[in-house]
Length: 499
Image 1: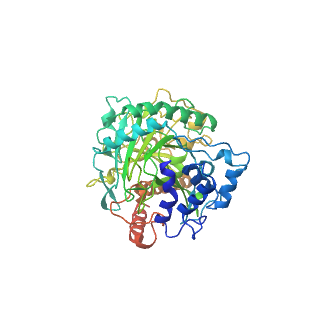
Image 2: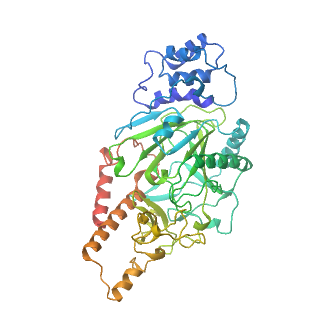
Image 3: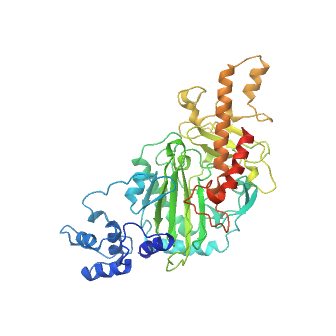
């Protein structure tokens, strides 16, 4: 297992101090050598895994191998499972405090603490190898990273990416990202096509075991028709805290992420009022692993690929990591069907944590452009279908004032339509008819909408949507502290101006 051997050494080089469960007086290599001398029949990957689960204790790892119930180890080309060696489940740790990152080393812990599941050694080894080779070759011709505006500055992403489509349609060229046209998409490679069936089967099996969230596709309906392939060359190429754009995915989206090549650290943290005071969770994503980000991940969490001062080389990819995020783009959210802002450009669907979804203008992300201020609540039915879909099903919850319906709809806006001034057409009609709403309710609603606009724009303008090229910012730190105080002040001034 080429990725597992890099794990402890990479951690020690990229941290100010060694992990607390490793003994400082002995190196990992020495401990592995001791274990190997005690258990010569076991391979290095198994010894390393047992050393990790034993918190760096050679004696504890040796005891696990010496248990009578320990099955005979068979050398395979896939990552070993620790399950046969554990008699009791390891306790789930407490959430980390704000400013701290809790590193997790087992899929069990990551699934227990985050809306994700990790499948190590997911693809057959030959398929993983050919898929990596194909995409390494493809990545040499990926388009250059686009420029975008952040806090008045033009910045560039540090890594490259390209959109791949399984079955392109005439409207495929209309896909956009942050208000700008996406670079020309490509067809799935042969190995991507082969891996797709395995990804779909794994994801739909996960969905059958989990409770379905409102707005989520039914189990079995999740199918792959697009994939964003990211390429990170070296530890300095990274991506900061962000949630994936929902414009074509719709609400409660499920995304399947396959990692190939160099091992990198994946971090997640909750957002919203309930996450106040919480830190982040970190997990090393090994070569040939599948991480499923379940419904609610893009609404209530943010994730990142953390920068690293050094990485251990993969035998084929070297210092390069290829990441394939398999997606299910909804037929009802094709580019030609989604709303357009007052600029005439495609609006972007975003989550307002705890409040629902909105369509907003993001033209101010593009150099030389300004936002028109377009902002409307998005309306979806129980299965995440928009009002213009032929499959849209209206229900009591989708009506204004219906119990809890606001989470999936535009309050007071039928069909998400607005006039040129950004006001609600129904509201204008009420004024023309002489109708009057209670002033207290109006003020409360206006204040609520303004707060949601602030939250959505904070998410839209979040520093960590992308990592600025050349930045040495520590993503563990709150971006509003220390050297970024000026950015925080600029954001506060912008918020004050909005309110």
